[in-house]
Length: 390
Ligand code: APR
Ligand code: PHB
Image (tube, rainbow, N blue to C red):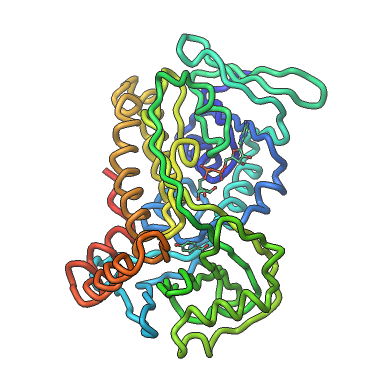
């Protein structure tokens, strides 16, 4: 089999890249190691920046998003038993859209199937080759056969644990990483969200987040220790702890119900530089991870593939290497700013036992400054709604 762009991984990065290339008449095949059902079963964040929505529009997959996505003009911060609203729209003229990553993935999968484009699911032993020379290709095993996909370019959209980044010689890649000393316990439940907007709570027992997927489906998170286990948390224990960490007026309003998903995720900041190696491009979680505070993961994956599709379009249409040559540097300029924001917001909102009473006082002073200063609120708002794509 031969294609112009071989995409490894059918998460949001790979699927969106495939859709953007298809709109531009560029041929791509996606090779994914899991089944479509498995990919759709993963629960991830669901806050889209306007630039992400614009890319989904450009890819022709925004119809349901326009109908079902919930526009949010702000968010609420909770500390000291009080709520403080940050007015994104008033401060920046921009808003975010709440629409689950599962829905984004489903829309992209459906559009791909409807257009008759090839996605190989359940490919085993996927490997990438020849990206430093003239004959890049992807090999994989399926239904007892060894197969090969020849291509002009390989897009490594295979997530943090993928094969693409791991195939680059260690001496050619620099890794920057920070692991946080806690995780997030999340539950999904078919109950109406407690507030119209998201609530990020700093509490002495630890961080809590009230998020949502729709007017009838909520997503809540609690900071937990890294050694904690999902089995230790009954639904009742989760709701009790959540209410303890929220201001009383919010806690009283929480509608509880049976969880439909419950999981613990560690928090990490991670960047690999550069993001291009010959004809291999890394995009999305394959190149970088942010802690979920601020919901930048999916948005960064989208802006990466926005830049990559632009570069590939310039290559095929204009015979110009400018876009693909600038890819890594353009992406990284935006990624590091989102890394900084996610790290800062994580540091502000969580309990860090090792920083002691002084650390808590600093957090408190910063939270008060943040909600009392238009300049500081604007800095939060403009990062949350998303920095511009240049
Ligand atoms: N071969 C083929 N596919 C692979 C391989 C491999 N060796 N390794 C991983 N994959 C697949 C995974 O099964 C997954 O479906 O690559 C896909 C990567 O998807 P994500 O992990 O979702 O990463 P990405 O598309 O970059 O999305 C980034 O979505 O996953 C969230 O937190 C993430 O919000 C962020 C955004
Ligand atoms: C989510 O809805 O899962 C979510 C929302 C905002 C975040 C993180 C996660 O900052």
